[in-house]
Length: 276
Image (cartoon, rainbow, N blue to C red; front, side, top):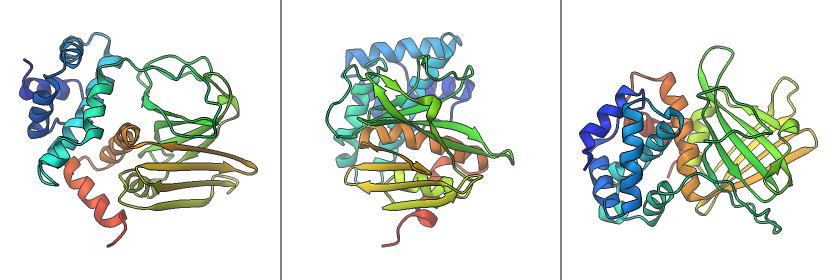
């Protein structure tokens, strides 16, 4: 069985953030009950250690670290009740499956998303090698959360929104792009973590005609993006929020490398979260 220490070494050598050891150990113990999870763990571990099929394996290990971090935090925030949280167990199950795009075009107005790290080439959008994107698909629109860089050279996230035009088809050529500023990034992360109920930015962009709103709705976060007379909305569910929040955390941590990720999350909650 792969140990937390060996998994952490490979992750570090491949440039991924440090694996939380306690959470990683509990996650591996829980995941060992699934033959599918164990098989994929060995496959991606081997690929990452040999630098083979980097994009898919590193993305999978990055997802895995999100689960380990949640288990680690559960050790201090609720104990076994958090460690056995159905959302975390669902994510373990999700990691057993390859990333797919919904096959049926939703006819209902429901905007619940299916988000994941993108591991495939899309005809509508061309990305450079190694580019990391998290997609959120809704009934009427789709979002793409991209690692980006500001004009000042700071890491950030850009949100792109495209309207649905057919089954598995989105009008990316007519997308709305909203690049978060360094000051906005912690507020967005706090909302994705549901520490903040509402975040809204208006008069954004060169023409000051863009608007972004994030609102917590139960276990989901509704994202509304508009420019001039165009508007897009997608609701991201609790499971998918892990991937989106992880991407934002990666950008934020790149700007504050002297802080541990645990310390950075504590600061974000303290300064950007809603006060009791």
